[in-house]
Image (tube, rainbow, N blue to C red; front, side, top):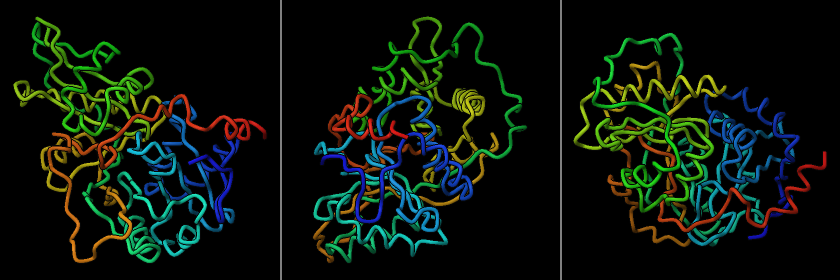
Amino acid sequence: MEIVPEGNNFVIVKECELPALMKELEKYFPHSLKFHQTIKTYLNDRVWRFQFYRAKTWPEDPVCLHFPGCTYTPDNRTNESVGIFCPPDKLERMDLIKDEDILFEWHSPLYMNFTHVGIMFKMEEIFREKVNGKLDGHIYGDIYVHECPAELDLSLEPLAANEVIMKPLCIDDVKDIHDLYPAGDIESLELFEKLVRQLPGFGVFNQSDNELAAWSLQSYYGGMFSMQTKPKFRRKGYGIQLAQSLTKLVIQRGYIPFVVIRPENDASRGLYTKLGFRKAFESVRGTFVPFADQNHAPTDLPSSELNETSAEDAPPVKQCTIDAAEGTNGTATEKEREEC
């Protein structure tokens, strides 16, 4: 789909207007944190190109969108996935989306990453009304936000001397990172190349042969993208060392760290709460399917698509590549953004 400057009820936000949008979103922390920091990371790091929209009646109607909502999309359509923010106590304002027939292709599947449960179920209500659709393949994740900086000084056991070393990730580590990632069929190798080139991450490496034992990486939304440890290196304290180091760095870069954790993942919850993270709200990710068979109940995605120590913000289906960092059909829009 060609990028359009405005829809029925939403208008694209010029780049020079994004700081003001962020300032307004701060009024709705922690619920707006992910959307806010996606803008911030976009401005600071250009990991990939998003198109941000706000309601034409903003800020009276505090609803905003960004396309694409996921890193990659299966059919190479810019508006195939979306990120949405609306305050949980103002969900009736999302009726603006119901009347938005320019920006949304209601007769095609729509993908959304981890989003506040209220927004997701309001979208399901809208999708059902528009095309008899439903939310399918959905999984839940609790959003934990870091609140206690003093706890980062928690005393930890040192890494095993002469056995392993922690150091920043580099582009040469990308293949090992992708191989260790449990949802490698969802996220492509190119995704990790973009993240490692432009955002901070740490790895724990075996001293003897430089084997990658564990890693953690910041994401485009400003939080903790993922943390993985190879089975033979588990229960050695590498996970909490990585989480602590990355949390400190994320704070130093001016972000509020947060992470998505599956409700049943006791190990991850224990690790992050020990570092000062607290549950802020519940979220869901999934696919909105048009013309759904209402007699068919939605099913969860396989648990193998989730990370060992924390749930990731990843698209819910197998993806094809869009080079969003370079932009897709976005040249004219980029020029418009600069005209302010």
